Length: 127
Image (cartoon, rainbow, N blue to C red; front, side):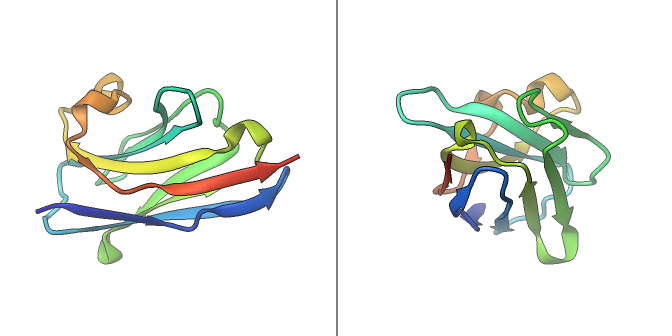
């Protein structure tokens, strides 16, 4: 049973930084894609960033490109989302997700292709 546990959220001022962690367990994740998504109040859950477990593929939403970095530590089975230059519009609950997805970056960005989700961690950016 795949389990994903996010941590690292909190309250930060605009321009600040946070690093989210997604600890994965219960499976060998070789061949998996790991995605970060976020959901703000009253909005749909949207794609933020994704990586293949190998790290060969990474991709970002335009809204976070250049500010966020996704990385993974295979030894710790943990994926990170480093978020810099945070803006109030980044305020949301952030979720990590995982699944075995064909190597197609478009599919990596689609939440319906992920079957395993964490419980989410709140990120609040004050202006």
